[in-house]
Length: 294
Length: 229
Image (tube, rainbow over the protein chains, first blue to last red):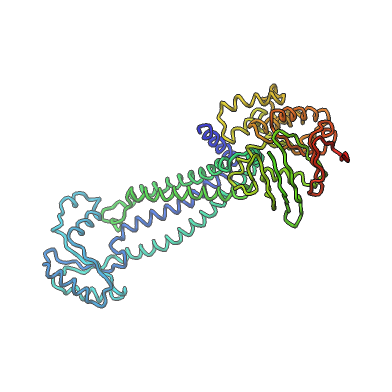
């Protein structure tokens, strides 16, 4: 077994070196396409966290007074339910408010330390039937007893969310195109490799080497290309994580609610690696298909 | 050891390469396959190696029907068959020793077995002293001996030879035939396609003659040309 592993490793390295230029081209395209892919995923997560409050079309936040009675809250709830202009709504109790407060002001530990759930208002997140109905609903509920304020989240935030969604489609499209071209490059590298070693392959088949034995070094070659490319792209993802943390660090600025966690970066990195592996394996499989017939 | 039962092989375009061929070769036999170019000798060998599949009929190799062998079992079949060619098919980047060892490496034989077997078989073909040379540094006869060593090193049950002396002069040919004879004496079935009438006449072994895809002669101790009796 150890002999075989040594054999495979040796053959793979020799072959990668023999096709150095093609290998580099393949690795770089994989890296660029996966970096784009990973980058847009990171951006989506970053914007996703920052626009949590307006997800699902929420355009209004009905804040109750901190000392609103249960009866007043129930009345507002009933009124929301009966309002023809309200499509849906969600209630945030004091605990939920505290969680969100902690999230938004995570960079200000003193503030978070001194706050208790009791000091925060409960609220309703409201989705109107149409965006145009926003002000109608706002006026209707401003007057309700127990209501402190009806806020409309920043329009700029909404614009950013839309822009991100558009950017996501464009970037994922671009990275798909690049992924396909990196696939072709890997296919081509593997074809060249099999061509360079066709005599050896012929002899191997002649003396009864199993198909897998013939295939493994080439599969490994594709895999290595995919993995190195993905590794470079993971570097980009890590850089983005650090960058997002440092560039948009102001606790009061527009981006105060935007962040990416290490968990986000890890998940994105895993996606990127998995995609690299898949591309490498698919590429080498296609590249090997022609010669595999006897 | 080798058995063809009513085998037909028709290539695309309705070209019949073998017609209703039935042959039975026993273990340890030495068989010459003769006939003009295009008579079906190469197709015969390709069918044995399962490089081609028969259109119909049954082919049995070492007790196993290979007519319907699944793709992944083909390597196992080929480990039972050693093959040598007119053009040797040696790897130019490997030494004599490495060429022979390669055949064992790629079917996963352990290194210590390789280390003992390769020198033995190189000794058998008389190349023990040239183990470190590259194929280009050898004469044609020597190269063919390397390819015989490679074909025999895994101790196949059957040795197929496709015009092994086609590129060699008469004196060298005699040397190659001696080695094939020696291998045959170890109990290996040898099946050799050839155009070389002198060898066939000198060896006086079984001769199977093909003509336009059909067996026209099968004699136990035949000559290259028909004897008429």
